Image (tube, rainbow, N blue to C red; front, side):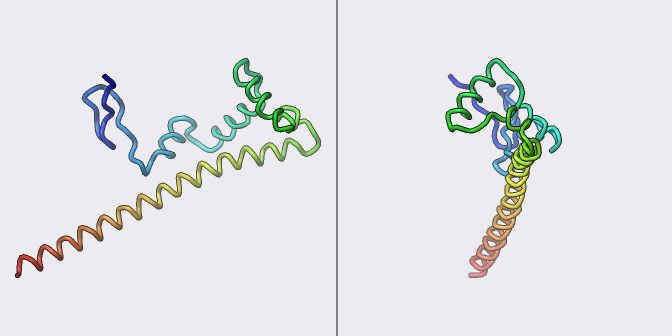
Length: 130
């Protein structure tokens, strides 16, 4: 039998960590994995250029299959390092944008919920008068 995860934002009786709320998934991943934008960008650079026995062959196969130049070679080309940095910063920017979207959605969900509760109280008050 599979363990039951904790409810959203709650604690689990099975010793599992609480599930992040849907509105904080990207923020939780970003914070737990990198903590700040600089570490995130460095991690993207490392993933693109480091020599690794597992990641290296997969990266070479995927990138070379498309006929593109490998990032480690690309960064040594004239102007390549700046373009590679722009790509890495784009990765960080995409994550930060998703975190901002989550934050905006969470605020909108709270506002919708508050409006619903206000309308429900108003309906209840009207029906109590009748």
